[in-house]
Image (cartoon, rainbow, N blue to C red):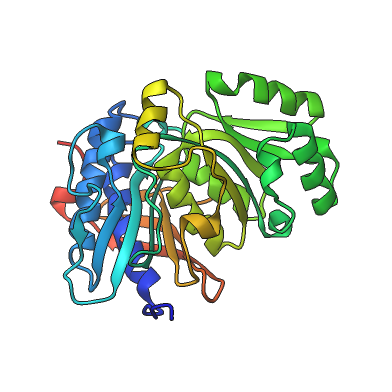
Length: 327
């Protein structure tokens, strides 16, 4: 029997993304992504450790930062007086977007009962296709190997659109040059972003302007995104996509099949899933942090898979002197 989690757990988790976003937002446009991420990670860790949970971080910050932090994989978070949880998080999804003052930087966290989440360490890269709830049932594993035009045609038919109406979110990387050409030749439009893999996944799953996400992004971000996509009722296909021989050998040494196709259910099991995201810079999904003297205004999305509840929360926070930005 699946463990029962407190119905208000999402409202606790969003406190951690709000804390990270408020700190990170002060670094917008300063050209210092590492410092922004470090400060946000510390704020998120402090908030998590005050929560009534017994959490274990499944995917931490060390792979992204290249150094250890308070949010490393395997670290215990919470005060220990609460449900045993798997935690995945990213204090700043889109740290370079934040550093350049661009849109769609967000802070995210997902939680599920202990043992529900799959860790794909040491994998770094993952190929993904993500769609909304309207298209989820039509997404089949063959889509990962089919020509882009075939998948785009299927999505268009399900949505009652023409292919030229579709918008595909994709990271702007040289490895995607051929796929971008395929999509454009098919007639669909491409929304290229320098970063923001998780934000893109949420946009594709949220039944908004973006119709689907395609391409290769982070493996860790894929597991985090699966919590949000599943909570939104969207569909996801994923497969590891090692970008070097050393990464491929590390995956094989860990006993992971690099050819296995994963769905949301494979990456995070069960229905007791919570996900929270807070905007850092304003974008298509959330409004960014707004500062007004000693106060900060945030907008957050809180999802609960079990009930299908989706809350958008606007909150106002008093800012302590030590939280008011870079020194």
